[in-house]
Image (cartoon, rainbow, N blue to C red; front, side, top):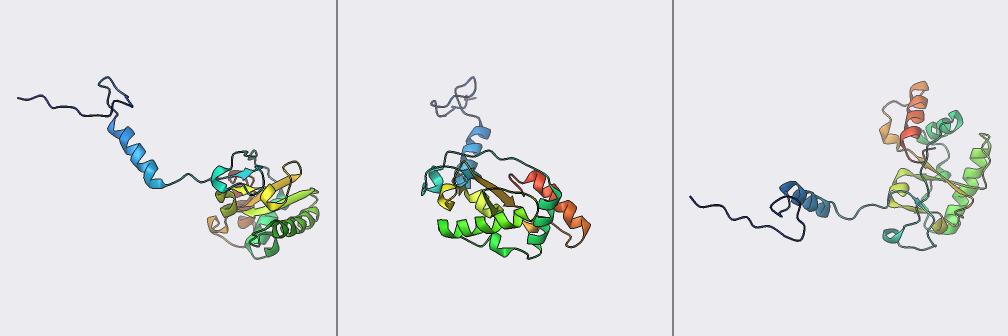
Length: 172
């Protein structure tokens, strides 16, 4: 009976034989198939930094407030579309910020440069400076996707909004 010959890459030893495990090789294959990792989050890199090069990530946090939860419900049901109108330049983002400042002030929240972004904008990587906002005064709120809610109308939706605020980074 012949002993099987073991062939492996010696550059990445992971076991006694100097070979990589099948799980390790499969993980590499899966990572390559998944494509480049998204730049989820909010960043304060210099303006016009390509999304793939964003590095200066701002901390994510969660805060619960009934007025903000109601704002989520209002937006899910069609109110304040100007807060998340797609923007491609700083002037458009600044218009969104001015609108957010007024809507938040009506709820007793007074901030210098607030902006609401969609969960998609968050997942793509949102740069404060590309939006014409400063890292010092800019405060970003993320609107949770309404597709996560299964009931529309009344208190159940408000409670759903509160829960999604807690699990969505920077969720309003």
